[in-house]
Length: 150
Image (tube, rainbow, N blue to C red; front, side, top):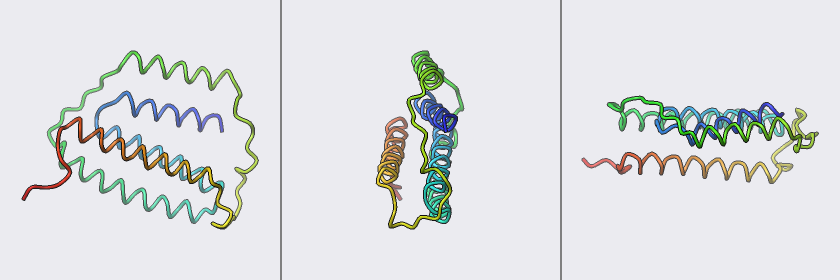
């Protein structure tokens, strides 16, 4: 569990550090895989599979859009010192403090949607908000519009 949280925080910090749309899309895909893994463990495996199919479809649409917009975009890595310091501090906090209680509800079970925990809904809302902000960030970074002018 601690490794999953560290990996999640690393991917979120990578999302802030890198400005390349393809890396940001890969970060979103990794975030969605981790979210689907936790949903599959807490709820039905079929619900996780359904979410995976929806996310893959959305990521394919996002990938096609990025390929059309950034076909001649040069790939460059720009590291920010501030982002790396924040990442190291956050990883240190996770390593040193065990502030996360053991979660007994992560056992594999076959719960139905009637028992759907409310905090998973908040995680999904946060994830959709993160996707929205990433799309807005890509659009404002490139100074383009999402509609085609025929």
